[in-house]
Image (cartoon, rainbow, N blue to C red; front, top):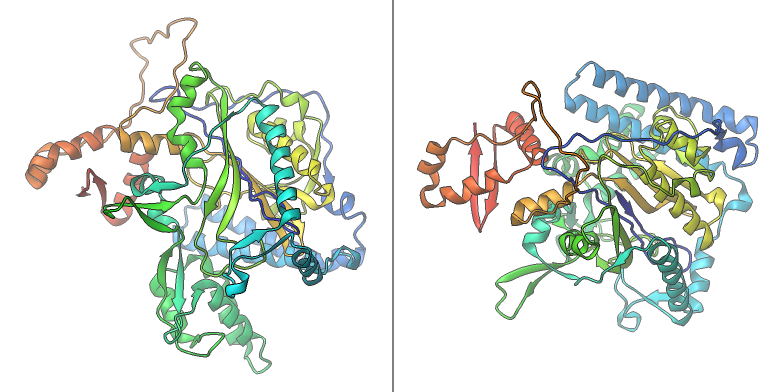
Length: 559
C-alpha cells in the first residue's frame, strides 16, 4: 500500500510529507483477491457543492452546467473508445481532451469562489519572510531559486508538524522507523526507473544559457498568442488543440512546435535550443575515483524497499507491518515556482505498509469508518460532477475505495491533516483516473488542499502491489518476499493447474550471440517476474524488440 506525503506548510513552511505502503507477494504466483468489510450503516452521500461551499447560487450552477456536460460527454467518449478497442493513440488524445475540460471546469469553480475566501498571497509571503519564517537561501549572494532556509519560527513550526506526524503515525500505529542515507548508487535508481524516466524536456537560451521547462514555456507562449485580438478563430482553435495535447508530445514533436510558433526566450527574446531530456535528479560520484556514479535521492521510499528483508526479520517474519522514514529529498527542478510548493530540496515523511495481498482487511478500520470525508472519485471526475461528502465506511463497502486497508490510511491521513490545522472544507481526497495510475496499482488517492494556487496535492495514498520489491529482487536475486505458515497443507488434484509465467529463451541463439556472457543473460531471464515479462511482451509486440542490462553488459532481444 503506498501513501505518499507532501505535507502542507504551503502558506508558512515547507515540509513535504509522503506516505507509502507496498504489499509484498507471499508466493511466486498468487491471485490477489480483495475482501471488503460489510458495514450496516446506510449510505450518506452529500454533494460537495451544497454541503461544503454552503449553497451555491443557481446562477453559478447555470454557468458551470455546460462545462460539466462537456466533461461528461468526453468521459463517456473515452469509455466507449476503450470498449470498442480504438487504437491507443486516439484514446490518448481523447484522454488529454478530457483532462483539459476537467481543468477548465475546476478553474471556473475556483474563479467563482466567494471573495472573502481569497488570500492575498503576495502580502502573506511578504509577512512570512519579514518575520523570518523562511527566506530564499544564499540571499546575500543573490539567492538560488528553489532553495529556502527556515528561520527560528519556521523551524519551530516545521518541528512541531513532524513531531505530531511521528506521534500520530509512528507511535500510535507502532511503525518501524529507519533513517537511510541520502546518497544512492546509480544501479538502485536504475532499477526503480528513476534514471530512465524521471525527466522533463528543457530548452536553453542560446546566449545566456537560461533554462526553461519546454512544455510550460510553449503553453505560456501559445496563451499569449491566443490573447491577441487579431488572432483568427481558426488559429486559436489550433493552438488550443496543441495545449490540450501538451502532455503527449515526443521530443521531436515539441521541437517542431517550437519552430512552428517561433518560440523565443521570454526574458531576453533570444533564440532557444531544441528541447532536450533533462533528468531531475542531482548526480554525483561516490568515492575519490569517480568510478561509482550516484544521485541524491529523489524520494525516501527506496531505502525502505531495500531494507525490507531486515525489517521483516526485525518484525519476526510477521505481516502486516509498516516502516517509516523522515528525511530530505532532492529534485533538480528546471523552473522552481509557486513559492514553497515546487522546490529543489524538501523534507519528506513516508510510510510503507506491507500486507498479505489476499488479506487486505484492516482490523482497526471501524475506528475511522464513520468519518465524513470529501471524496472526488474517478467516476465523478469523468462525469463532470463535484466532489461529495461520503462516509468512509460506505466508500469502502461500495467499492469507491478499493479495500479497507487503503480506507484506513485515508482516514488516518484525514485526521492528521485536520489536527495540524487544515480546514475540513478545504481538504478533499481525489482518486486517480485509470490513465493516471501505474499499471501495477489498483487504487490511488491524493489528499488535496485548497490554496491560493488552487487545489494542491499534499499527500499521496496508493495500493501499488509489490512492484518495487519485485524490481529490486529481480536486479539483486535477493528474494524480497514474506512467507506464511498454513494451518493445513494445500492439496492439488490432478485436474488442477498452477499458472506460471516465464520467458522461453532460444538458448542456441543466445549462446551464439553472447558466447561467454550467455550464462548471465540466461540467469537474468530466469528470475524475471510476471509483471516484468508482461511489460516486455507488450514492448515486443509494439516495437519488435528491446534491451536489458546485467553486470555492466547490455543485451538486445527480439522474437
